[in-house]
Amino acid sequence: MKQKEIFSWIKSIIIACILAFVVREYIFTPIVVDGESMMPTLKDSEHIILNEVGKNNPDNIKRFDIIVFHATKEKDYIKRVIGLPGDHIEYRNDTLYINGKKYEEPYLDQYKKEIVTGPLTEDFTGSKTVPEGQLFVMGDNRRYSLDSRSPKVGTISVDKIVGKAKLAYWPLKEFQWMK
Image (cartoon, rainbow, N blue to C red):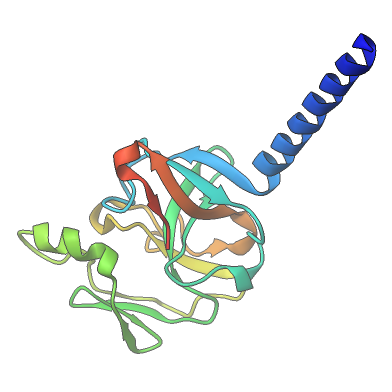
């Protein structure tokens, strides 16, 4: 009887470990925000959960999603999706225009109120439309974000996406579901 009970416990532990591994590797991944490029939405050292399901399917990525992607072999970036394949991105007078249509960005309101001089986002016009299979991404802390505006980053390939931010859970006072 004891051997049967021990075997049952071992089997349960092995199954639990396998399930935890599968969930951790292929469905939800915890990460820690590194840097201030997504402030005020996400702060440095904040802990978030990424959803990896359908991460490389362009149909699963929506405008204004917050994503993590491989920027280099050593470094992942977290940014907000602004432009989808085929979009023409432009900023005029601190206002986002996509394909000529004005878009509101309520997640930037706090920073815009705090600015003493100049715009939060400098004027720019994309030199071309966002290529197929690519995304145009920007950090919410526009003055201090290395993102698609920089030739160093440029548009990012959908296949470099690690996952979409779904939940900020630590510190507890910053708990929030990502929209």
